[in-house]
Length: 118
Image 1 (cartoon, rainbow, N blue to C red):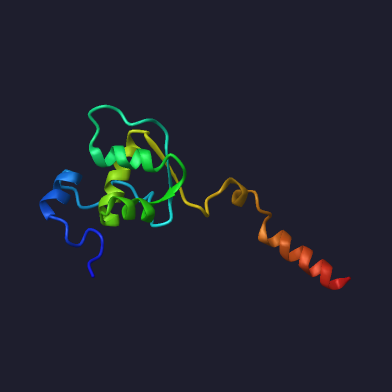
Image 2 (cartoon, helix red, strand yellow):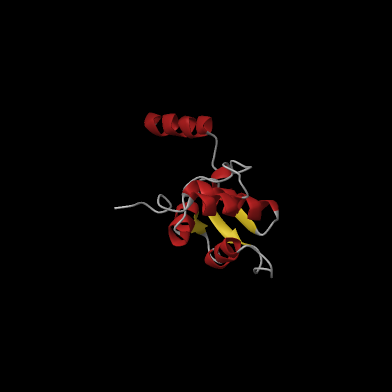
């Protein structure tokens, strides 16, 4: 059984990424959610068009790679291109606005001690 991207022609992958082997940003991991911010433009690379259409709703990087049948490393490079152009936004599920508003752990410990003393 072969894994997605393992049997791809190396020349094709080289062409897709313009010869790059790494994404220019560390903004993406497997569960980073990607959302399209615009419609595909004429003349765009076909994989970029597919990503924009696929990510009309939040989609994880690993799902994008599976749908495109490409290695995650290649998809991260393509996503970093789109992110640099402002065509997508990326957000890690743990980095929500609600998480930034959680109370301080010291305060929570004080509340716990107070409850135990009751």
